Image 1: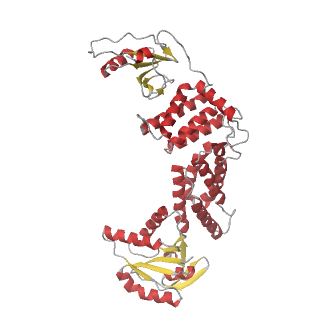
Image 2 (image 1 turned 90 degrees about the horizontal axis):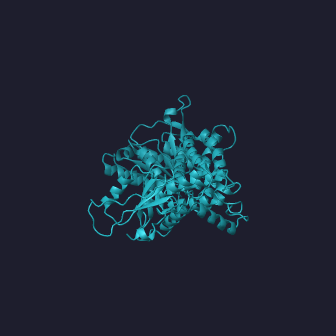
Image 3 (image 1 turned 60 degrees about the vertical axis):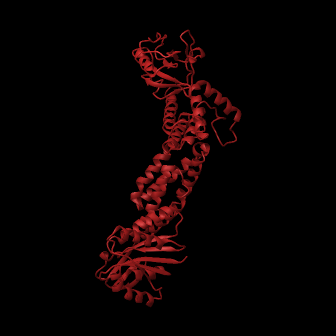
Length: 501
């Protein structure tokens, strides 16, 4: 592949020295001349002001041509005194990266912010071109010159560019779960680690990030496609393989690229709760599924969060033939029986979750779709309820039927009226309220009458108060009992003789 050198030229005085890079040497006063020689550049672009080019353009061109290197092309830039001039320089540097070639950036010289611009351009270019060609960055460290031998090292700063590219890919993975764009940066960073290992005297084992790149890809594929069995339960699961690869890579990165260790730790923290749980129905497996649901929720992936919430909750009641997705031992019949058991013990939550999932999966195509905040709030509440089940054994909701229209711990308080009224019309007497019950106020009535009913219920044995909404069911609006939460929707309806009022 053809190589392009992009370099800067200032107005300063450049002294003759012997530049060194990876065992190669070149005696010259221009670091661009040395780098072009070492890399065998096919094209050379020199960014310089008119004054800098008038002073150094001719001698640089002669030095390059004397070494059988191509004649440099001068890219004229301004002094950067105005925003327009700065953005023009930015675009010209960006244009220098385009095309099918490898690029070497020499940031040794330049006027004012030009080398910084090079760094900003590199980051921007790599952000919008994830499959961009090879790019290396060099700096002629004249301040580190050996005065006795008059030799000057050229520092290869590419590892820092790859570190930033890899950290961006990892952060994108943390924010979205997508790992499609991470393999190539991982491979490039691995090469840079191996180069540093070789230059450092080959101490310790030869570093390699190949296994990490593959593990990230496998985990990402399972994560975005909801392959729960492969993600958590398989031996070893893609979560466990990724965790193992991350822990191996962590020591290598800490040794050679210490700043990236904190980013790796974030990924480890994300993956660790999902790993090491081959049985999805036992306590560790349930915790892994709950962590997975919370991960999808934190990423704003509500459809996946709802799916894991339902299937993970059902799996709590599963036998060994119903908690092993993706295996030959999995039985559809046993899974169906498990679903029925789950529904029996969690009927209200099951109905709420079913309606929530339908709302999401049918893209809100209904008369009264939920708001995004409502979807998020309901998912958060349901996941909390699922988690609390591990603190106590499964139990059926109490069911009682009596004259006060009490069902499943719910008491209806009907305040509906058949004609317009004034505030002096008294409320009906309170029904009998078992301690801890949910009292649902319902009926067609003015809003102030509902306010009076709330006041009437203050100090009653009720554990919570709700309002009946024909579109949703009973909505809990006040609670001082852990069995009911503000905002919780209970899928119940008042008896027909009160609902018609």
